[in-house]
Length: 300
Image 1 (spheres, rainbow, N blue to C red):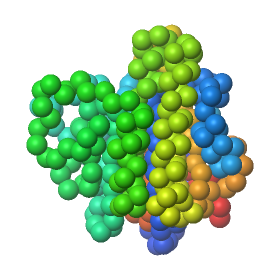
Image 2 (image 1 turned 90 degrees about the vertical axis):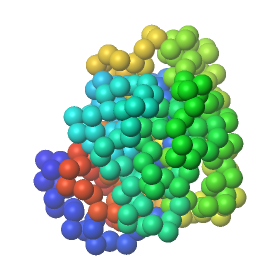
Image 3 (image 1 turned 90 degrees about the horizontal axis):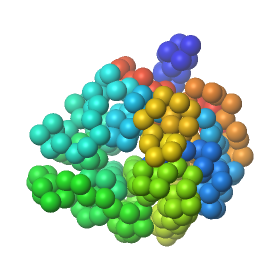
């Protein structure tokens, strides 16, 4: 049914004008939806309430950070993107399938894109010419990552601080931002621990920094913002094929979004995020995509 629905929608997708001026995707690493709903996260919860939301979206298997984010940003499952490792291995190079960055660059070469992350392994998603800015605590060029930085971990507040001037100055058409804190706390102290609740609070404050930057850039009314996660978690890991580990939030807010809408569709997958981004920006979906736009979340 997903394939048939996409075939019916595709002629409209390829012919329509961009539905929004700017898309921001923010990923809360380790974002178990049940824990997020209990956490002190007023910014996150406001966007969920005001926009369209699902607390029952799903990630891929295995539910690990790099494979899951690769699906989120390529629109395909692990069998196609083939990034099945979860650490930074420079010799393995970059992802071999197109990313949303490379597809947007091909369609809209004059518009800015950026990736701001808390884990250096996101470097596997950087391909030359596809992303204007790749930042993991500082901005990197095409040179190899120094060996001393191959385990680099950047907290959410610094990730947000790095993203703020880029947003205000460049007004990017697409920007991806990753906050690692809750995952770090989950592995060390456990999912649902007081330390992780504090980490979620901090990441929400970082979200507030990003929202303020979008506002100061004068593009809030022309932006669409997606909040999601790579995986959930339970006890001190997130690798098991159980709902607590594989369920993720999927929140969308801003231009074109249905207001105060609980998404009824029960089969939102993380690779649908990539498809939704491309649909919003009028970039045709490749035939190989597993993802499809979450059309229910948007006004007709």
